[in-house]
Amino acid sequence: QVQLVESGGGLVQAGGSLRLSCVASGNIFSWNTMGWYRRAPGKQRELVASISSGGTTTTYADSVKGRFTISRDNAKNRVYLEMNSLNSEDTAVYYCNKVPSRVSDYWGQGTQVTVSS
Image (cartoon, rainbow, N blue to C red; front, top):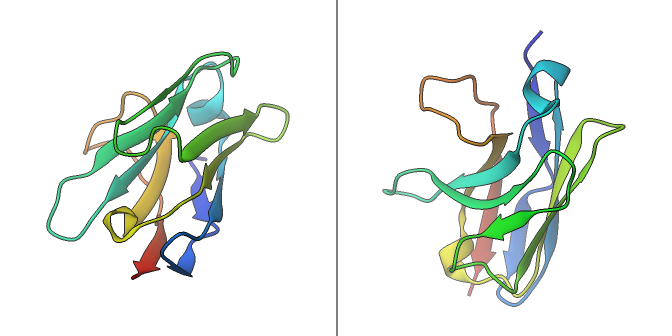
């Protein structure tokens, strides 16, 4: 069964922090680079961070570099996103999925992150 469940979002003041968590079914998680995507109001979904299957290689969008940290726990099929120094530009629905992913792939519900200024 395909499963992607994101959690940990919420309302936070600018400068604050949040930690997102995602649990993925094995057929999505295993052996795949995983990533966190986000879709801000009126914008297309973008990849903000990715992590290789072994967790040794991470990449970040320029807009979050130095503020966000992605990690994974392969024993638990989980991916995490630690977000610090949040600003209003980070307001979006955040999703996890394999990298790359297409619009037509299965996507979870996502978790809403709202940063108030």
